[in-house]
Image (cartoon, rainbow, N blue to C red; front, side, top):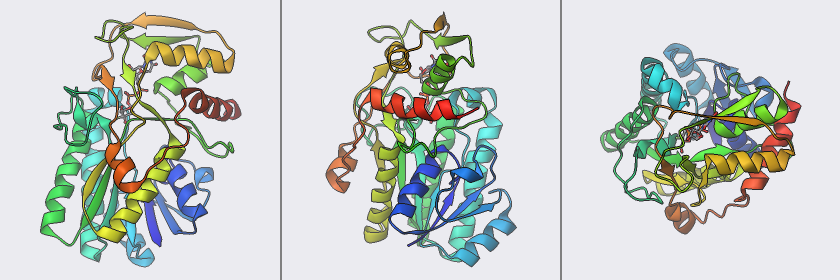
Length: 323
Ligand code: UFG
């Protein structure tokens, strides 16, 4: 199969490229390298390009003529989206529309969309299933809901099918240590905690200790990036086989609080570090835990790394390699 991967030089995209490459798919990565790295593309060809550049994008898509496009290129930080909503609406909504327009024009009908648990906002019930109403509470989540809505409309109006994969908290790194999270400004909990353990920061801030959770800090469902990558291949095969447009949650169905993650990071790294309890971070829902029964039952997804210590260990090995 010929697969075009936008954002394939980034954290999640590069792990998906690794899995596609392993099974022999032909890959073209389209990435502007704003957060991605050329060394992260382990298979296929990398083309440096921006999704806002319609002309170039169309040229690349026409020439490669993919069977499907997997779309990872996006801005992804909840807190930043609250401060800079327009950046999120431009990158995540307008650029995706550009891509979809080119796809429709060139008759490319299969699309895998990188969505998020942020689409649910503060869900009434956890674990969260795909039927939960979409009620985002931050611009990042809204940008993803907007595209899901557009995809739904498009699938009815054109010869176009999609799968939207809604991720919970992705963490960990390639067990062979070749790729991992390498954002220039990392804000995610696991990465911040590991960088603090490494001595890059003198303390880790804990955002909010008064949430309605057992220890007062937010609970998230942390999933190893390789399990998520495999889930993408399953959804891709499903889409190519059935042509059905669907959404799938991807998480383990088990949550850890911020404090639990911090303690686990200290244990795995054998490093003690200072923490500081500060106020809530805007845009954070208290608890997000996935109900991934659909992915497990319908696509036989069987995660291999559902273990917080293992996730931290692979991320720590990776983090130690970074400057
Ligand atoms: N946190 C801290 N200190 C930090 C960083 C984070 O206390 O230095 C807390 C946050 O306030 C939050 C939790 O750790 O309560 C997790 O925060 P992250 O920034 O690691 O991740 P988010 O839950 O905000 O968002 C991530 C992805 C989204 C995805 C979401 C789904 O970035 O794309 O998980 O659960 F939608």
